[in-house]
Amino acid sequence: MEESRKKEEFLSLITEHQDLIRKVAAMYYKNRADQEDAFQEILVNLWKAYPTFRGESKITTWMYRVALNTVISGFRKASNRVQRNRSDVNISDELIKPERDQVSNEDIHVLYQSIERLTDIEKAVIMLYMEEKTYDDIAEIMGMTRTNVGVKINRIKKKLQKLYKELANGY
Amino acid sequence: MDIEKLKGAWKSYTNDLRERGSKNTSELREMLSRKSEQSLRRLRKNFLIEAGINLAAIPLVLIIVINQYAQVGDHRYYLSGFLVLLLLAFLGFLYSSYMRIYRYENLELPLEQKLEEQVKRLRVFMKTYAGIGYMLYFVVFIVSLLVSAYDHVMGALPRLGVGFLIAVILFFVLVRPLVRYYLKRLYGRHLDSLTRYLNELHDESSITHEQHD
Image (tube, rainbow over all chains, first blue to last red; front, side, top):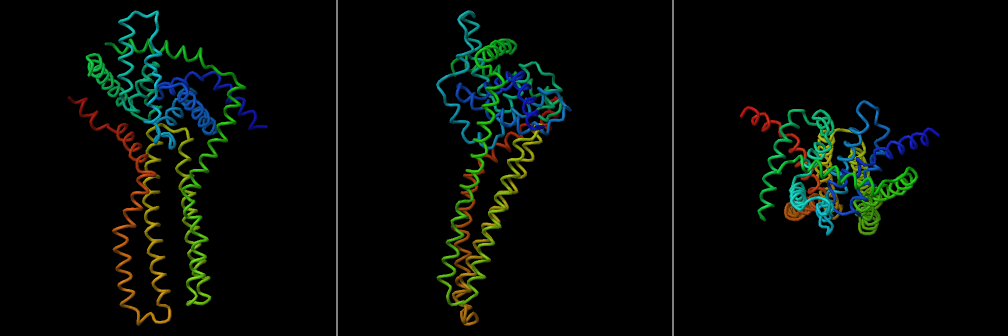
């Protein structure tokens, strides 16, 4: 009975915050099938971790932790990450919309390609930054200090600018 | 090029994701039940593949020792029992190590803490795995040598010495590299990537230096 109540409570939380899982999956996996697979994997890990959630942090902070733990250090995923990334469908293509102007689309395409060249940890940090999480939240999710987060974000911005220039110049 | 531009694009993209793939509670419930079973099956499969060699070795040890070591009389039953116990203990070690490592997949821990625990446990597991493998090799080799000279151990000392020397040479030339290669193939790459992530999260010293600059 208790188990069933907990499950319903959990499912209602997930229904409300499922975008978050989808965003993490989208950051790390290019094609839809892989994203769906990652979504399911994260969902199961959230369910397994749910009994340890004591409400000491925000629900979204907890969800980001488990989701990023799953995609970054998941035992089963690491070995086939490279293979999974070799897909034909590219998120950067999906980001392009006809209603945006040509220059803007090109910028976004190249910038997204630059993000794909970041390390897994850098991707996590920049994704949380794009989600407008505070430095304290990012630090709590990643287990880093606030200072470390700040410096890392600056470094990633510089790295992205450099990568962007290289890609824009056709390197 | 400003990163703020990407923020906007990211928002727009993730809004599209919501429109495309939003699931209701019953869809999520069904997905969760299906995937939980799959996950358990995969864990069991991984463990069984890893333990398969050891499980297959148990009847093999019994057959070889009982049929080939007739010269030691009833001692062959104790001997086979001892070897089977060693293999079972190894199996138990594999199982408990797997469970300990997998445990960290499902805990609500900050990424850095989780990586630290996983790296630590994976290193210990690999080291212990290799150690037990080497020990088993020597135990089996020495027992075989002693059994071959059961009635005249003292007279066969030079032969046993040569046999032991061969065991040591074989260990360095074949057994140790093989065990290391096996462990590297199975777990090494994963350990390397976990360590790389951890180092990336740990680069406090360079950050402090950067701040002073």
